[in-house]
Amino acid sequence: MRVTFHQCAAALLLLLSAASPAAATPHVFLVQNSGWMEPFYTDPQSQFKPLIGALAGAVVQPGDAMVLAAFNQSLPGAPSPKALLSLKADPKVVRSRVNAALSGLEVARKPGSAALADTDLGEAVQAAIGTALGGKPGIVWLVTNNRNSPNNDQATAARNREFYELIHRGAAIDKVVAFPLRMPVQGKHYQANGLMVYAFAVGAPGSRALDALLASGRIASVITEQPARLKPLDRDTVRLSPAQVEDAPGVAFSQAQGGALRADVDPDARTPKASILWHLENTMYPYTIASATLSARSMLAGEDRKIELASSRVDNLAPGKPVPLGSVMQLPVAQLPDKWSMEAMKSAGSAYVLPGRIELHLANQKLELSQAFRQRMAALFPGDPLPEIFTPPATVQASNAVLPLEVRVHYGMGPLAALGGIAAALLAALGAGAWAYGRPRVAQVTVEDELRTMRARPGTVQPIYDKAGAQVAQLKTTLFGHELFDLREGAQVRLGR
View (cartoon, rainbow, N blue to C red):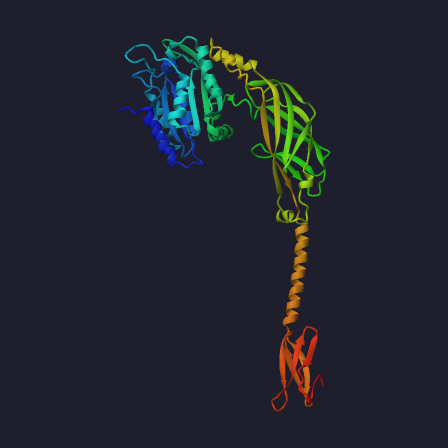
């Protein structure tokens, strides 16, 4: 019995509910098997299927749920996508399970006809997001020859524009990257030069998971091509990294792991501002920032301050080619705890951290697709006007980049040691006082010409009796000596001999 895509999707949702939400990322792999893909299936030298198995084996992590499905265009009697596999990942078997599921996959034909099936990229992606993921976060992988031709529509450029409209305007899609791959194949009917692998991050958690995969090198272990960003084009578009700090004794900037900026500050530093030379880098491959107006602000310790930039404009900023950008930045010295404060004492030997951020805004932003990328796409997909389709929407005219910043004040052990010494001295004094207070004192008392030796602790009172056993006085002992009181009239009692 054939398992439907809806049944596999239900299985995926069941797997998701049993998985740890903090660690698991669901993956949906959509593999095109319409007529235009014929050479990828029939060429004996084709690496198409092994590529998908290797990619799935690299990106699906322990505990992740995944669905593998083939797609073309849905018709009555021939639903699309069609599920091939659904599982909760064991990394040791993902690649082999995917390869086994793909081994029998062939080019699809229209129901009741010898005609090869058409393609609907948008339909497949929407089914993966709405049905397989059930609207929940995850990553959808789409492997395609990039020819979108539902109902054998020859106006593939228009259909591709509809597909990219889904990418840019789909509210559920948070991030999209594409990998154009060279894979020349020759079939009986068609020949092709390359493939496109898309990664659609659904929701913010899906976007974070995709970022983590890109940073880990897992994707790069299979696909060495640099990812082309399709979405978003209005945030995290540039990267700032500190190159040099001037006029700020006791302040040092560095890049922390994860990309955050760290300012290490000496507790005695009271410089109100610092001159910082940055490297400004475009992170939006394959786009060049043709022009944009720059402004920046810092948010630190509750203070929102403008950063003075040496230049308020950037032109022809190509990806991966940083340019210098001077700035003057205010430092929150008035907000730093004094080294004798309780906050400083608690942080002694480590660092007192003030979290914040730097925001860089690009207004009047104009993006251009790089010429090298245009040429590569033309070679891989000849006849398709894809570079024009990659042009960002006209609505994307501004972007923001946020650089996390933490000011770390390093307080030494000196003040804490000094306080510790004072505390130790006080404790010693208190101890000595306690010992002195608790030590028995000796008093000599003469009663009726009889010398007696009495012992008592400070703060105590003892009765004194005569030879007949009658109480004739009381002896009070203090830290400073002894005192007789309550003497009976006529009693012969005195201190000393």
